[in-house]
Structures are given as C-alpha cells and as structure tokens.
Length: 170
Image 1 (cartoon, helix red, strand yellow):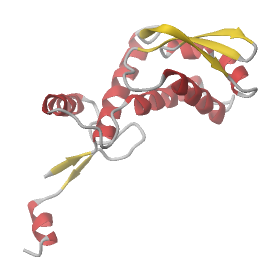
Image 2 (tube, rainbow, N blue to C red; image 1 turned 45 degrees about the horizontal axis):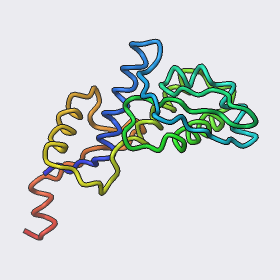
Image 3 (cartoon, helix red, strand yellow; image 1 turned 30 degrees about the horizontal axis):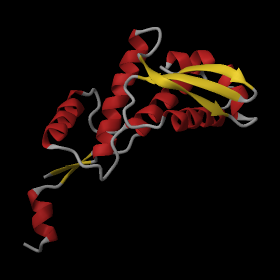
Image 4 (cartoon, rainbow, N blue to C red; image 1 turned 135 degrees about the horizontal axis):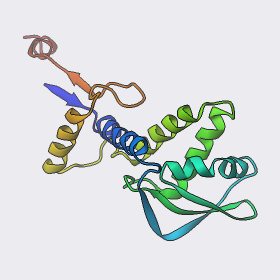
C-alpha cells in the first residue's frame, strides 16, 4: 500500500510547472485579475515591493506603485487557483525580506516559486474526485522528482504487506 500526501504531491507538480515556465519564457504566464487589488503595505514591505518589481513581474505577478504605501496588484501567475492574491503578495514580500538583500536572484526566485506552489496547492483534507486523484497521480509520476515536495518532505509512504501484518500481530 502506498500513501500519498496530496498537498505535497500537488505542490511538487505546481513547482515543476512554475520552474519550467520561468526558465522557458522571459516572464511567467500571468492571469489578469478582473479587478486589480490595491494592497496597503507597511513601511518595511513597501520598499521591498518597489525594489523587486522586475523580479515579481518575471514570476507572474503584475505589481505597480499606486501612491502612499500602496501597490496595485494587476495579475498573478496563471497556475494559481486557490491562493488569495493579496495574501500571496504579502507572503512573497515577507519571503524576500527574510532572504535579505544579499541573497542571489536565483535563490529568491526558487524560494518564491516554492511559496507560490505551496500556497496554490490543494490542502490536506481537501476532497478530490476520482478523476482529480488520477490526474494528480499521473502528473506526479511525470515529475522529474516524484518522491519529495520542493521543500524536501516525502510525498509517498510505502507500507509493505509484512509491515501491515506485523501491525495487526499476524
């Protein structure tokens, strides 16, 4: 029997799609928001946003200055389905801030793509239909590394027949 962590599996699939998109194109594919979102930033996150507009754009977010400490979020990566766009932007800015100015651009990109994949992935406990489960498994095993999520956590846990019998004292 094999148990699969559906969040970690989906996170792996999304991360691989995001990294494939960001390496093949000058900018990741964007989903334009129907209504742009005004995001009020604190004194620490605002300069981080302004200093990293080009990086954010290359990762599929369209962010622009709006006045005061506000930015306007016009687009998010097209792969995003479940994440809250405003919260995603705030989380990304916090991640950039935590990495510091000395972090290499590739490190920033990789960490942000991991964060986007994590926030966009289905959650543990989310109900999936049988076709969704089948597609997730198919996508997972097409991934270059189907054994761990982008953060290194295992996706699969294999229980042998012997382990199951031992547990039930057989």
